[in-house]
Length: 126
Image 1 (cartoon, rainbow, N blue to C red):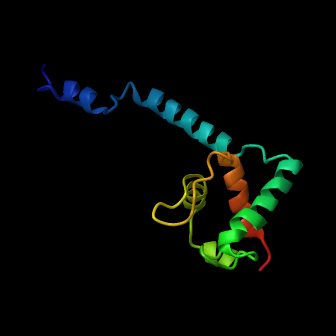
Image 2 (cartoon, helix red, strand yellow):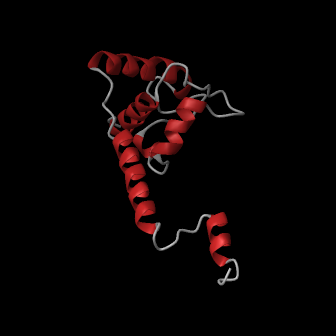
């Protein structure tokens, strides 16, 4: 223990040694590629997109207004969503909003489908 235990402590807290840094960088790069790959997932099929659009107009519209400009729930227009990150919106769709009438939709929608809905809401004409 010529280093006063620093190497042992570094291993305990997860600090990489100089030899381990290239491996850690490679693992981080692979993990980020996996995240990027998930972000580039295939869009829903055309039939599923049509079903999602119907869900958006009718099921979501029953609370957010048939034109999605607000009702029991807030407006879902591009302007209203502009400051909200996609991750927040996808999470809200899948998990619902506790303490509100917004139910979780994760039993009916995948992560990719929720993201497709968010993208669709951001693209809609005003």
